[in-house]
Amino acid sequence: MSLARLRLGVNIDHVATVRNARGGALPDPVRAALMAIEAGADGITAHLREDRRHIRDADIAELRARISKPLNFEMAATEQMLDIALKTKPHAACLVPEKRTERTTEGGLDVLGQHNHLKPFIAELTRGGIRVSLFVEPSVEALEASRDAGAPVVELHTGAWCEAVAHGETDKAEREFARIAAAAKASARLGLECHAGHGLDYATARRCAGLPEIVELNIGHFLIGEAIFVGLPMAVRAMRAAMDEGRAGR
Image (cartoon, rainbow, N blue to C red):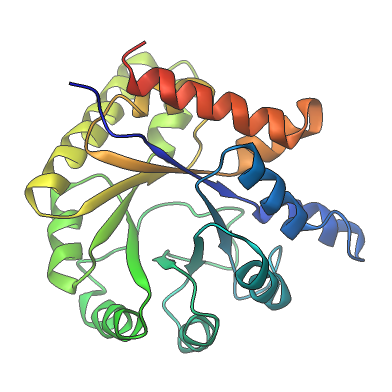
């Protein structure tokens, strides 16, 4: 039996990183989003950080106004970000941990420890018509806590697996992938929609695509890096092809 098509969300944060390195308006992350959609992206992800190191408030507003596909608004669970999300009304909001000193998101949310903090944010976003996902470690405990907090969607953090693959740590990579596979199965048992992301490239996305419970991959840094050499449309089309191959078991 063939699996349902796997959705691709393209994160355009690091187009804004390049823009902000010099200032001004170029390169334009909204243009990148439109190009990614034209090339086959099913949605666009953008993370508005507290320090605005890449995506800015105006980017979020323009993305919401101009793109034809769903906008996935990555955000910390703060009152400021909640206000922005409720005013912007993106299709989805993914709650992620955030520290000013980190270069990128370093791990999943501590849903167990932050249950009482996260639950009202999830409820408020849901009442606002925004679909909520939680960026979590691939563990049953994190999934159960996500369900209990009221989130309908989880995004599994694939960073540890991808890092082990990149460093040639075969045994560790296989252990980490087994955790992801087990968490994906557990998400289905718990009634959670399952996404995955962080550190994925063509090869790891192809393998992840073979997990039937995962319905969406969110990929950013690798695609923007590839775009420097081959252009963003070609990078997105190549990722789409890798995901389709993995979904088909090739």
